Image 1 (cartoon, rainbow, N blue to C red):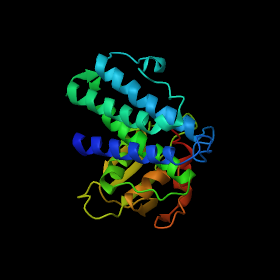
Image 2: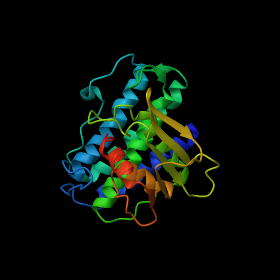
Image 3: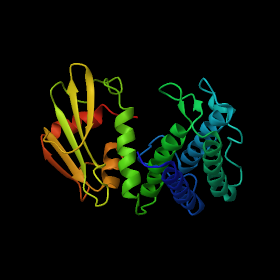
Image 4: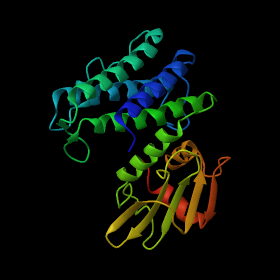
Length: 252
């Protein structure tokens, strides 16, 4: 896992990218990678999520707070205020986590240090900023270390039973994901396997039924179903049906 300082920088950077799209685009713009949303709805979701998670940290919540309790959780009426509202929400979350330190707070997997929410929202925002950029044909730029940690977090979140549609991997099948960026210092490779006890995730290089290679940013967006596996720069080697099954059963 990268440091909380790096995660905070990533959160602020991706929020600024989203805010820039919002400032220069129509709020009614359709988001193809989130087909039920417009850009306005995407911005509302992100800004409210920042405030909601920040409020849970501020309260040291021991249970999930209703989303409606996020302070200032309504997108401003004036579109000119949307970019500032987004940036302010990210700042609130970062400040809350900084003040809480290692104090425990409710998370999806039980009580954990407040930094859980900085990491979760940093990667949530990275992907949603990409959603907005892809919708308006902008180049998506995600730092390799942030993208690699986003992949690692995604694997941590995926349950052994997928999304209720079947296991991500058939029993005995394996998937190797290899981020090819320089400077990741061994943090960019994973082997995923289906075992009798569930899904196994191990860091490191290994042989597998299917290997997916490419820049960490592209791999993150492929694994999050934002880009197709045939994206330029991404290689799929071996049994591509294993990857197809994985993607079909790991919807967030």
